[in-house]
Image 1 (cartoon, helix red, strand yellow):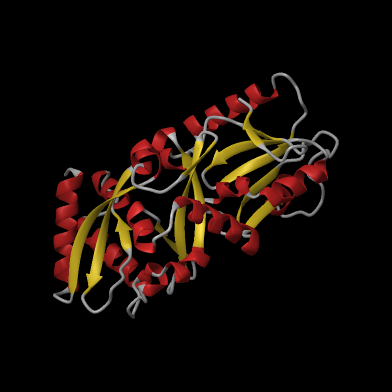
Image 2 (cartoon, helix red, strand yellow):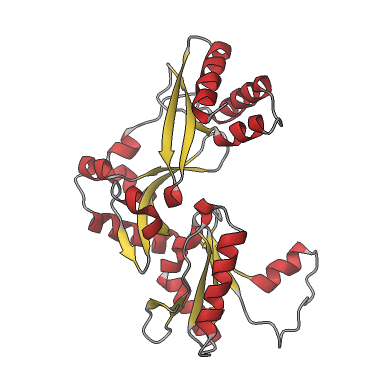
Length: 300
């Protein structure tokens, strides 16, 4: 069963189970790096907000015989009920820019791999990357965060420009400081359940994981000037910034070796090509932060 037939079958079956109070809507959602996912919105006629349930996971399970159609329908309804809200969303929290601006956040994506997506979004180029904007909201049921990606239509509605989005996003980054900087050595020690030194400190190159508190789309924290400056000052050296995924970057002190950047770039390429899902890849380059100038440049 191809994906289109699967989507139709799922929507029909879920509609039959849910009853006439609900409307099914299948949508295509462009995601990072050219990926397009198919989602099912189960719309409660009494509520103006509904979760979007991605269906590729279920299609793959069905094709491999890991889940029967009845089990898939049951699971989708369960997921919907776990995430559905019980009351109308106050749309003015988004449609009014003064209400929405404190929730503005940024994400970094690869410019070349998102050429078509970027045509629809206000954005700012940054090295080989682009900063896009979202408005984040707490999820009522899960305690996590949901987000709305800011498009050109939203900017027109708000009567603002990209310059204002950038200014407010940078201000929010500094004001709320949602960065998370963890020493990899300490983190590995916690993972194996010991507070003792697990590596020879003299041989271990200091390595830090920079992300956000949610550890989701946290690579944007490489634009957090305060964190980079403080880390470089602590180490007394320039920083090499390794884009491990869209969710985080690694910071290590630059040793200034001639082949340093090329070696790190080879490592990034191998991880991207063998370990990451396509939508998690941020870049095939590595960057250097100068503690003297406070600037980031592509190192290789």
